[in-house]
Amino acid sequence: IPVIDLQLAAAAPEEAARLRDAAQRLGCFRVAGHGVPRVLQDDMKAAVRALFDLPDDAKRRNADVISGSGYVAPSATNPLYEAFGLYDAASPADVDAFCASLHAPPHIRETIRRYAEKTHGLIVDVAAKLAAGLGLEEPEADRMFQDWPCQFRINRYNYTPDTVGETGVQVHTDSGFLTVLQEDDRVGGLEVADLDTGEFAPVDPVPGTFLVNLGDVATAWSNGALHNVRHRVQCVAAVPRVSIALFLLAPKDDVVRAPDAFVGAGSHRLFRT
Ligand code: AKG
Image 1: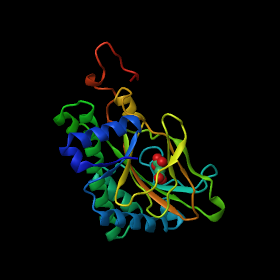
Image 2: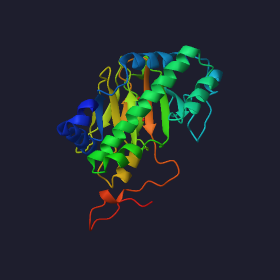
Image 3: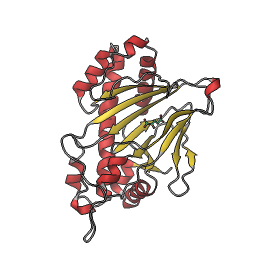
């Protein structure tokens, strides 16, 4: 998985080309030079670990805002998996409401608020760089994703010695535009499918970086140029694992439609609106 330095990509055409190539060929890449302080990444992981220690009835106060956006309890189909959800992480009021619903103490609220702000800036920046890489003019590319809703999904996998080798999350593509993922530095298990062979390859965590996955909306919006990567999570050790995913979803009050610039002369849109 290539590591793209976002600061370099802003200034050096070769790094911007590496980003575009990874998005088109693999549908995923790591980012460094992203501007989210390492200490904030660590504080956020500590904060979410504390939230998962809450009793069951407290966790369930993280209610749905849109269908499926709230707390997901372990279930018969996914007994190892639970998650908190926050819709819309781009909205400071929604971030506050999420923290209030869990009665989070002030230092945890402050961490979640700062992390949401910083990672929202990051996800919009990556989306704008992808758009610019495909040929959209800078002012349009920079502006267009600012208002798209973002969803946090904060995952915990309750692994035990008996579950090693089992599946934590089934094979899927993400349904939104792109995902910025902070993995657990202590334990891996994420795997991505190779486009050519279909075989799954492990993605080892690299502390301090984020993994970016492109989703279904990216493929439709780019008229097939961006690859929505298939991935899954396997249990590789008897260690509880947390990960924090921020999804840039889709335009709020609009349909997803490939810009004219992406539909070449004599060509057509591959996806209907
Ligand atoms: C997802 O949230 O879509 C995931 O695939 C989670 C990945 C992970 O936990 O590493």
